Image (cartoon, rainbow, N blue to C red; front, side, top):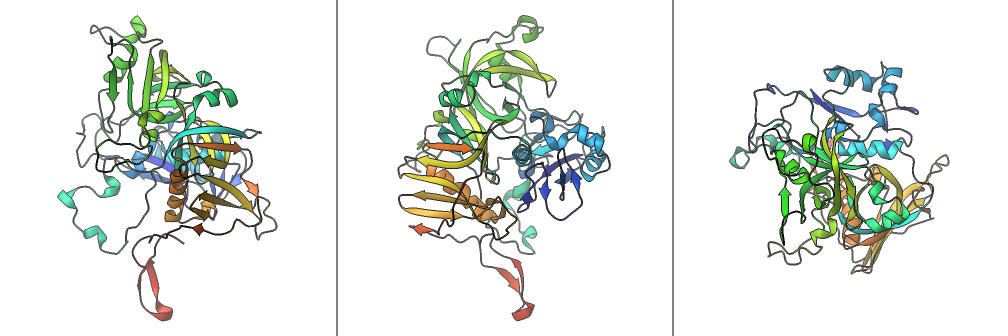
Length: 487
């Protein structure tokens, strides 16, 4: 079995736990009771993992699609409160531990996957934020949100697809993530104001999978973990040890590939059949490498769309530079990895959850995004405000996000309550305002108080959020079956 928890879109978060409030049975987390458990999905694979090997383009390959692209085995993440075994032992009959024990073969987490979104929500809900505010430079950023403009009509499942391919949500390819904005922070400033980058716990290893799973199923990643948080590696290379003017580079794939190529690059070539890094030591100790992460490999549009390679923001701005320390056993997986030391020459990868608007460098919390300023062109910025709520008992207020440049001003309502296309528009508005570089101020509070933030102003165009409303009947009998996913 495979299962993964995720958040219910539009639900309100519990600030003290990793679950989501809403109607439903209670689930006890480490600190308090929440009303709504996470959604758990189970998928059975009807193949023998010992004999069923899949080719990369196999249309029937299991564990492919949007869900699995955004999921990793639980040991690839830092400790999450949702999987706290002590809480499970104290509350064995509650729905979450009871369900996961039933679905996993060892009555624990043997086949447990979790989505990046659910892991982000867990950290945002359970980690304590710094007590002071700070400003950091964002060298680059990436957003991959996709609007949902499809028309859901009853017979769409019977429409033939080109070459009889798999449905879009089951294809083995790369998918966008609406809920996160990835940031590349200036490493020198990070060392001065947060923590020396060389002290960050970082390593590279092959993403762990369940022991009952064939490695050719689903996706196959090399991950760089910072503070335990996984970033998927797209390319990495070095200029050292390659002779005068030489270099070595490895580009990883999405599906299964020979991991010996990664160890050959990070440890040194294998000389004989019995030659291993454990026996001879890591020959690449002290070598300097660079890595391009999938989270920071598309930093902007092309200057000229007619050209094959003409990026407006050089991809090198998103590189992470590091030196190899040694070959180690990764504690969370029990498998081989290479410990690395980050350098100030590159960026520190970070992420901002667009629901919580909290910024993390790996698993290290930096605080709420309160303000972003960009010199452009055009010059602009992002502000997070809190406005008074109609509910007198609500002391947190209602958050508003204002994105403004020299030409226009866009006002977005509370991100938790936005419909999907408005939520994606929020992500793209922040990206388009600040992708050339910005200064971000993070702090322990979610924005400053203000009476009214106003409305949209300036050169603002409104794009249709999909086809017209699909309905049947008239008057009081009218039934809407498909409406645009936007307010």
